[in-house]
Length: 351
Image 1 (cartoon, rainbow, N blue to C red):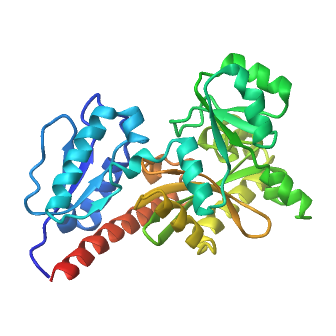
Image 2: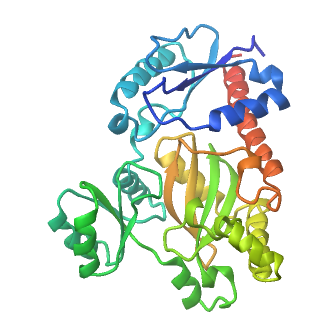
Image 3: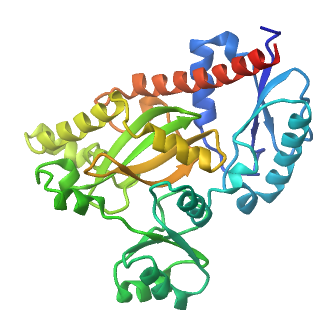
């Protein structure tokens, strides 16, 4: 193997993009677990000129997406860095061009063409188009921003009256996304009504790097769209519900939620190939994929997020109960191993 070079991480400069703490969490763990490998990382903020690529083994673009739509100046700079790296034969991870394929409607179009099991989506520019768009997609739909990953300002349309109400509240253009009621699917398939999947809606997340897949979490919620802010684990961690458990109430529900989440994390997913193919279809190398588990064991994908947030285990919801410190460290170590393997593979090819 030749001389070990640097891994250059291109990030947003101050005030030029969303600040996501995952990079700091990742580097803190890497410095603890493998200080020699951590020493090879160098961060290049956008807005600070062209980076020196001499001695660089890999360039990773850790930038918000969809990149050109949200941060066009950073996109232009990233493309210049990518082109310079390509001329030197330096491999890229999550190229700037691939980071432009993750708006809700564009991602949906790519996945539909590739045969990825996912929701159809349509971009609506005016309020009067909303009813027709929902009817075209099959009735019940999610209406949300086309370029944001966050769960805020997500609205549900189930009928024409909902569509008219939502049209007065949401900002346009908006993404209209086909809604799959996976809870209803579990119930219709005869899944025991005592099952969490029959009682609540759910969302699973996994990290994908190339062909490798690492599970993250499984959340349940009463609401159709599930995220950290409205999941039952978050609710049960609050002071009121903690007090109720201290009095002997609601203990079984928390045990169920934690057991389901832990089981999900510990099992190898049978659908890993589907997740990897979905990320590859977008031209991405790494992403966090949100999806739901159907009663027949298949999945429906909601979105791939290449600029994901993974908090410190100590800051995770119900950290001690979910063994979150060990789980997050395992995830971060896995990510480091994937990057290391990519660099080593490049060295083997050039040897």
